[in-house]
Image 1: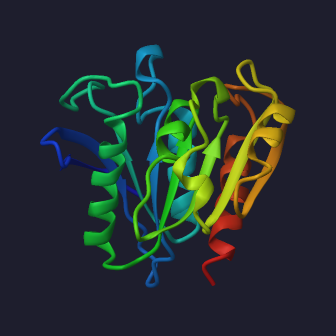
Image 2: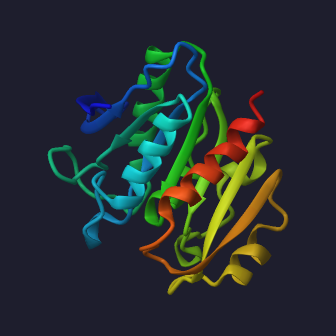
Length: 209
């Protein structure tokens, strides 16, 4: 299991650094694209939740792509409060399509990355996973809320930014959406990340069969 570092080019011409982890399974189930936490607070593709999701993808016979958003690490451009960052994840979707033409994509984000991920749409996306989405960052319901593919929300029990009951109330009108409360952890999910990522990914993949 070896990471490959690549550069993606966004539609607006920004070079984005990303880690790609390819499954060696004979049948690739999906490609998982992962958005990381807030860049202005130290978020990057090296975050432990991002890496846990890449390992989960590998265990479930999926490729994964984890880019550094613009302005982070060796990625070009500048932070744009989640707006232009959507183009960074779109560039990862285009790479996913090159790796597995017409194969399903699972769009994942953690914290700030979940806000970005839920606002990315692409014909190949077959599900979204939003880990600890901070509701104060949503100015309106995300684009994904109006689309049919499965959406899985993971809500830490002691999240400092959004209480589980707030997320449940906000998402109750979203299509095809389930929420799982992560018991005993706060926004930073210091325990149980591996199991939570696997369970969420299993939920989405089960809808692809």
